[in-house]
Amino acid sequence: MLQVRCLLLAAVVCAVSLPLRAQAPAARAVDFSRDIRPILQLSCVRCHARGNDKGGFSIETRESMLRGGDTGPALVPGQSADSLLVRLVSALEPDMVMPKKGSRLTGDKVALLRAWIDQGAAWDPGVTFARSTPRNLAPHAPALPDAPATAASPVDRLLHGYFATHEATAAPRVNDRQLIRRLTLDVLGELPSPADVHQFVADRASDKRERLVARLLADDRRYAEHWLSFWNDLLRNDYRGTGYIDGGRRQITAWLYAALANNLPFDQFVASLVNPVPGTEGFTKGIVWRGVVNASQTPEMQAAQNISQVFMGVNLKCASCHDSFINEWQLADAYGLASIYADRPLEMVECDRPIGKTAAMKFLYAELGSIDPASPRGVRLDQLMHAMVGPNNGRLARTIVNRLWARFMGRGLVEPVDDMEQAAWHPDLLDWLAQDLVAHGYDLKRTMAVILTANAYQRVAVNAAAANEPYVFRGPEARRLTAEQFVDAVSAVTGIWQTAPDARVNVALVRSHAVPSREQTRAALVAANPLMTALGRPNREQVVTTRAAAATTLQTLELLNGPTLADHLRRGAERLLASRKGSLEIVDDVFERALGRAPTSAERRLSSQILGPLPDAAVIEDLLWSVVMLPEFQVVH
Image (spheres, one colour):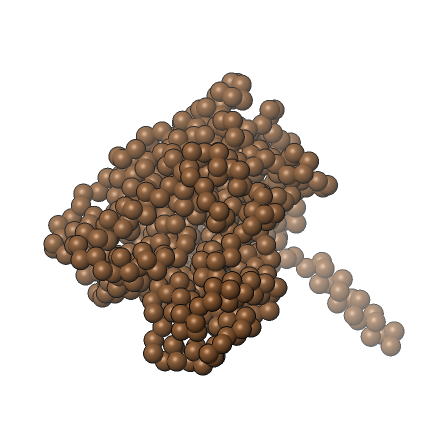
């Protein structure tokens, strides 16, 4: 036994004393783009590209990579065994193992890297790891192409060639009943009344669809009530929640409602939020969290994250903690923007570890405007505001028209909508809509009308494309009602609306801005109840630019068993019973209000059987449950 132990000990000592060896080169031809570029992208770019050259070493180009850094040349083409890069990634230099951050290279990757160097370190033309030229930033006004008379709108003219190129058959136009329901929900957030549906269907004028869009957009009060939810999500504004009790967070509701009701030009809208005016301070002030908070959630950093995401389509959340892994933004970029809102220079903190460096104060895109770090905070905010809304910033208009397109069509021209560095599936359409918005004084309602009057919007809804398939636009996607739309739709069917004290939040607000009020208080104007929360209304502690589209188990349970909806439908049934209408009248009334159509003969017969000749509140409630559970009710087709 002792002899065995001695042999094992000797083997260990010999193994430790042998020189370390690098992985042998791969015994095959290596392709740069296929084999080497992914290795460099994953393991080296973070520290040695996109403007970073730690240790004086940059891999942005082949020339800079061959040049090496502070310790000399990194590689010698044809001689991987003599290349410092191989020794570092193979852990042959214990004090300088690379990469310092992230996973070490596996043996097969080292083998590929060695074979690439031995084969001459070829580099495909045009490949660079430098920071990309910003996409969708400079203004661009494309010319409208020729198209047949059937493609009269600018949107349809631009899409005409797209359909041909992609061999895509556009969906047919929806009928009048479907269109007025879709438009009223999209513009005003409510179901159309039966009277409005009948009047629109009976209208024989050739321009009735255009006039309907204009009439809906002119309804300032209902427009403001509906779009308040959209902007509350984006601007992180709510009526109660974290930060409001101790004054660390402020509502911007009064200002926001007035801005929507008066159709404040979008550039002025943004300017008032970036460089706060009375009533808008809450957006950039942020939440003052209690207890220990990650450095990436300081109020100044929240301001940087929010304005970049909402108005520029730039997600800085990763870069607020460390150089981003998902895009090219770096910690210095996030701190540079946050510093504009700070009262003192900000020391950068990487993953909650202060690094002893102060970020240079700057806007995300230097070409749009400079910030004078020596100026007072108020002057700096004014400089930032002008960079945001100035004529050279084509990103601002593109970001908002992309959000509107996504809202109406179910998917943006650029996806994700918070990554405007991605290419649009139709760049000219994005650019034309953006430039048209700017040319007409940043009038968002006008841009909405351009989209809503196009055949592209008025086509039959299609199912969302599978995630693994290349996206081809064929028409708007079918969309579920938002939480607020669903609650308001149920109220329209039952006649039971939000009442005091639930409506205490903003009834006075509605009456204070020269916009006529009404007794029917909308869901957007009150704090979220359990039903709205289950259906996806966020708590708005973070910016929310898109709500999840897929149904969840919680939503199913709330719709089937939740007390909020159950109580609403019970009271609605009691109201219908008190109206003393007959069974057939109740059936027709519910279908007309809920679905914008009369029941089919089969639906009328079955519903009448359920109600019986002398219905009580319980069977009327069953009818209401049945109708509001229909996909036809819950989906914008």
